[in-house]
Image (cartoon, rainbow, N blue to C red; front, side, top):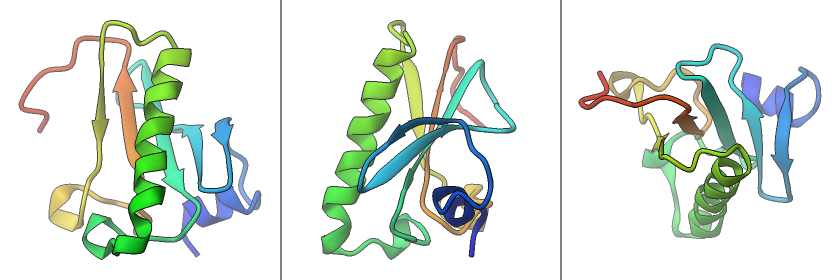
Length: 111
């Protein structure tokens, strides 16, 4: 069971900003920007590379939730939504999640 599955199951605390039947949004415990939120599907999908056609509504919901949370947090000047896929892509937890980053100018390339 991943750390995200434990947070979803309330075995580990998290600062929830959103929860519905498909996903949650929580504050990242090691933020990389003044605003760093994780949007995590409740279904334990390993990564983008593991998506199936049945997962399309889940991924769409996660992106919509990220947009709504960004609005609620006042990220009117912009933000970045990032998904790391696989070890070389920087994915540390084998459970699909979206990083919502903002609150400062973000540079490119990211890393």
